[in-house]
Length: 354
Image 1 (cartoon, rainbow, N blue to C red):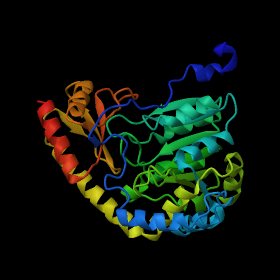
Image 2 (image 1 turned 90 degrees about the vertical axis):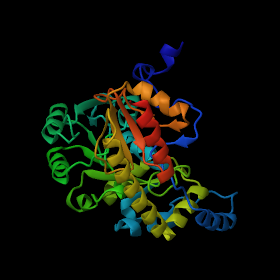
Image 3 (image 1 turned 30 degrees about the vertical axis):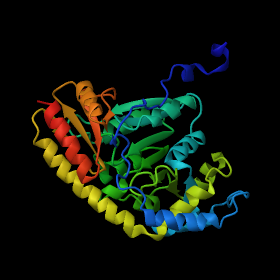
Image 4 (image 1 turned 90 degrees about the horizontal axis):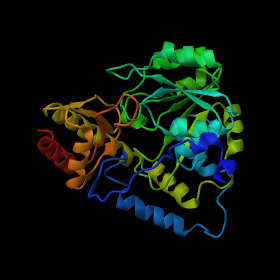
């Protein structure tokens, strides 16, 4: 019966999921290890208590949209707010691809891109990032996009799970050579010195995706936003469900935007801990970390990565096994934690990799 109900391309998919584990230290989802400060939580509760919970949110989300526009340095009609940037990936693909269309995706990268493209009937076309440094092969991406008349190209920078940024010159070359839409996912942009807002002034066929789930410490609130030319944002918004963002998420984001210095201080400390962790990992035998400009470090192990993962979990440390990603056999992704968490992680790795 299921064969007559569900699309065949969906039946053949492996869902995006995480295995449940018991852990004490969570270093697997690139979250802000310092969390949303208690003082800001109190400010949130004061504001949200004043809201009428029986009423729908503002249909146009004017206040948070205006604040995000101010933060990003764009006009409000260039901002689309969503229930996490995942929703915005989905709705952008919904308005751009049809059955049989091609979506070009450099890999390894965030697996949700290909999953959503396939569910919508499109065909993901993988282009392998350069061996060794995971740099963007701009010419190969352009060739694939032009050969298939790709409707969409998706670039993630800093890239998850590799941690490297893609050179602006390469990104611009791809945008200029492709007729379709180029989605630039900047979920981790606060952790690096790269900012692609200038692309919006120069090109009509590009959107940027950003999120409050990483640097802002609000992964539980589920709020993301898209930046693009006004006419493009208007069309993408047609696929969004009405009232997709609740008053609690909206209020949390407004509180965070009122206290941006907190985010900047936490990001600076995460960057410092990342650099310390990278240096320490590089000093361990059989451990090979890759330079990162995000809040995680992709690391290759001489010992089977499954054994290293299990050794970490035995000590209450949950890291991310990415060894099933294309080209990443033997790799784990390690989220940057607090100084204490990183020291515990290093102690476990030093013992488990000997």
